[in-house]
Image (cartoon, rainbow, N blue to C red; front, top):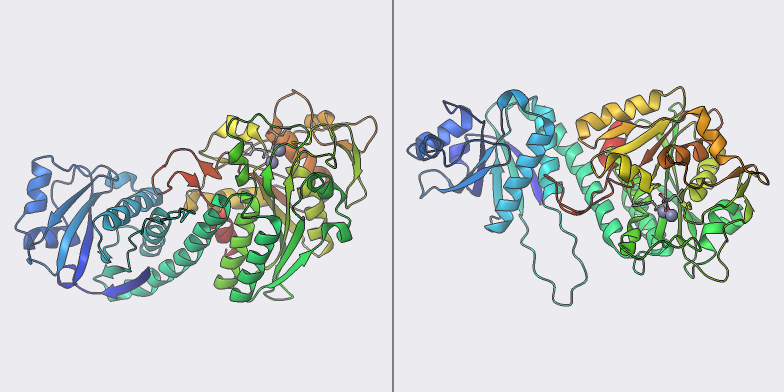
Length: 489
Ligand code: BES
Ligand code: ZN
Ligand code: ZN
């Protein structure tokens, strides 16, 4: 989809579908909607008067134009109460519009910008359009041909607003496509997206955007904790290191994403209900890979080192057992209580390696705990961090504009007791004491030292069972936009 920004009069632009907005309770139409309504002899206002459309958020109504304006059809989309207009309302409205356009096979869609700060509105409109039109291609023998909108044009009357709108469009395009790519990676099943395949994908992406990429062997690196997870699988584990360099003077951020291509639980095997969903246990890795793409394209002013541990967690004669003690990359020993608490094993080795490579601030992203799903559902990710806490606040701030909700969970000292082992430095989890998202965070914190750090548990938000607004059911690609925005501050 080609996205354009043009100055012009909305009634004179030739297109298949023109999108205009109304607010709930609008007595009088204004702006573009009024201009279109006048040319269409009041058909929109009479539909409002007849209460066929009321302007509720994401409500829509299609009109034929019969040649009265240059557009073939007009879609009126509701934005709800004008006083309550948010970026998410704009994203949802944009998704409604683009989905309708696909349904009625409109190749060229033109839209006005909702009345809001023009850069933010343009960003949200494009996010809703790109993210809202996503569909995973799948593997059907007879692919149903998906109709694709070829062109999406934002038309603005005022010249002076164009630079801001263009800036908003450009950043939104970059991070929204990155987010959709992450969704593709997550949807791909474990037999197709093996650690090696994801590593190849990251290498190819790096070539495209000019990042440095190394594919390393965790055995050679001495990633003992990660290897204890990988041992039961025939798939060869990989560690991908991506680097983005801005300037020697800039700070160096480490990003780590959990990349378990399938989490069976290992010997502590999971029940079979919904087990297929554990193909999504690499959503953190997918997000980090795509964050790196977007960061390179946007030329953010930070140095970034991404360390992405990739492996599968399977039961097997060679698999690690509950009760085993392993030595992690840092030398710290870990008693494995559950082989299903595997994500944190990958995280500690990858985080320590990122520190060794020079990262002075760390953010990790992981589908870490079912407890996070229980606590926050699919609505918000859990975020935790060091006492210093500034990164957590910054990321929560970024999440407010991205719409990817994050809620802070505590890392109380008391939880450290849960992870005391009689025979090793630490154990990987506790049995039945609750607070598992926090305990997962505490486990990771134990290897962090003094590095400022945030941990984002996306177990509930990485995959939706029901569509919600601009996000269709399935992989969400969270928190790509939030972290790219945080990096671009
Ligand atoms: N991958 C799971 C967490 C998960 C659950 C992700 C549901 C997405 C949806 C993780 O590896 C896991 O199994 N965690 C255990 C930890 C426990 C053993 C301490 C859990 O949450 O049960
Ligand atoms: Zn697990
Ligand atoms: Zn897992």
